[in-house]
Image (tube, rainbow, N blue to C red; front, side, top):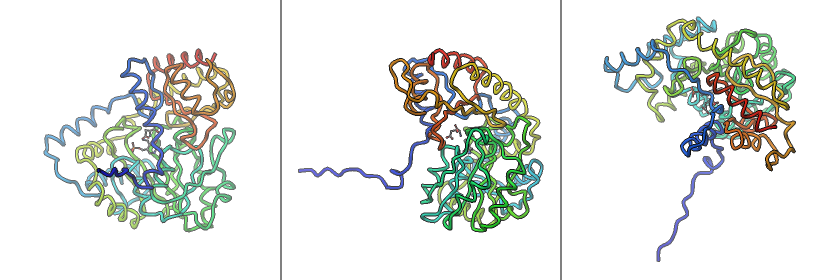
Length: 400
Ligand code: PMP
Ligand code: GLU
């Protein structure tokens, strides 16, 4: 007689939700393979190719035989390019010992959570937040503390809300500005007001995710928490090349951090990945050393598409939307559809709504629940004008 052993997985992985953005993209891919004409507005991925001057640097690196393990925390030349970038674009002064290069900003965030959090430590997440924050925190045994914001306040957390969310267990505050998914940008004054609250709570470390920094439509200037002298030693600035440089698949992100945090993440990375891909690192040296003016043409295009998608959305009943100041997402409130029945489908929540759009409009979006705000859906406009026009026409028709 054979005994059957039930395969089991760790409680850790069982407690994690799959990434909703990646899951929706996979679903769209699957439906396409099955012959359906799906327009994908779910993934935050530029539809541009990586610019030629960056690709050429990678080809050169292959021909120059860059093929060995790199230093765990990144090539010195790349760290220097990151130092140059931080100084040029953000007025931030870092030493090499404060920079760590990782396999995407996602890994940078994961590293920071792993080296800072102990079991039960709380991490404040203004909602909506980027989909992976809460699960990255949970993977480090931390407790996400969601702070709801409102469309009326442009989805930004106020100093009063921050103060009210802080407990003796609070260890970190995480936010992205420009924000994925809302596109909101904290001004320097707004960040200063949050920093003033944090002054009273020196145990709190800030993770400032600035990966959409360059995708800014010129209303509110980009500001970095670490540029305040009193916050510098307790802020981790996270950035990467995926978005602004159209390099999502190259997988390079980085941090500028207090040295003790940089050292700890390097130790972790040394046991996990041994460092980021050598060719991608060489290409990013060029990407960061060159002026951001070279990628401005993509930002200009995103700005045109933002205008287009907002006009089209305003033409559809029931979408309430702010004007995003950065990134390439709109995050409309769709609560007016809750309780309605369309084509025999009752819309109970944002997930039902996103699934309805997938099935009846053949357009992939992401439910707002994934970002900690179930009143909205996220629509990415990192797609061609033709796709945006067609997708919104289909959505309008499906909702009539
Ligand atoms: N932070 C935010 C706010 C993001 O939207 C993303 C998505 N790419 C990341 C971090 C992760 O970036 P990367 O692709 O470099 O891992
Ligand atoms: N950050 C992008 C998004 O929000 C890419 C997907 C992901 O990394 O989860 O869609």
